[in-house]
Length: 207
Image (cartoon, rainbow, N blue to C red; front, side, top):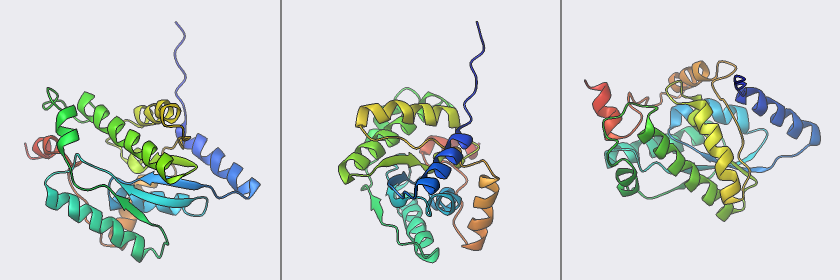
């Protein structure tokens, strides 16, 4: 059986941005944001090419105080970067996450619990993009070296047909994106959490 060729999602994004620039287009984009540090570099890449709406939908984050602080840091980042970008937020409701995590509590990051959580948030983002009339949707999650970039993009590709809004493929780690996010986090004195968000990931780092 022939080995499946690995998709270069960073190159796909580069080509899309070049196409937009060539055609003089600046479509609307709903960008799911997991936190301020991951959003920092991502915004520097996308802002000139898209009319962005940030979407904070992260029911996995616990406790509620952590959720509120990450949201506040995201809003502060947008303001201090001088960007005229709205932030749409979902109210804190961890119940959907705990329901999808049942029986998967002890799995490691990148496991089935993580995949279900990402799929849930991407589906919410796609539906919100449809509701708001955005041309595309995507997520900041591909900047993280701890996340499965291929799964995230494949999931977005499947969901674009379900929600009826095209998904913007990406790998924001490319062009030293993750390194740049660390530099920007220092520049803006951003809170950089040491766990993804859920109680299970927090438990794992404390072991």
